[in-house]
Image (cartoon, rainbow, N blue to C red; front, top):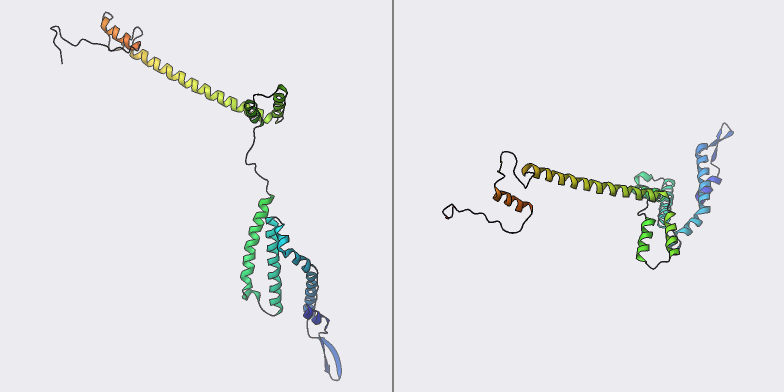
Length: 252
């Protein structure tokens, strides 16, 4: 800063004579001097606020910040330090693109993107992780505490009603869904029962389990009728069938 100030205050002109006469000519172009003056003013402004900013580098102050604010502060300190060092290199005639400081700029750019994503996520609306059904909670508490007075039960019911029609609509929807499910289950059971009864009527006769179709049995066959009667009545007693011939010998 002092070197820039001296260069600013020094007169960048030189005298040259021609034929005994002298005319002033600038050695440094005017556009360059304007750039130097602007740089000097900017450096003075940085010096005014730099001391206040360095106070934020204290560990005690950083520990009191939120994690996101702490990350922003540390990133800003690193960017300012890198920028000042790059400016010093340029003032000394060193190209920053050919200096290892270039990799530091790239690293800071990556951290800037990460911090920016965290900032965007912090501004996004929070998503509820769980919801509470006040009416269900009220019923659970009411059944868990059987010694509640009438006033307490009425108060709990009023609290559950404050949730508005949304929960009531949801409960009605759930009730209808359960009703439809039970109706469907009942209809399936009824259809299965009717199918079995119809199949039994097709295979067995309408009267005492007689066969229908190509297998016709004589009604006078009392033994077969008795056998089917026992099957229909689900009798657990064993059924004895005589398999011997007329002579009393066993037939294989």
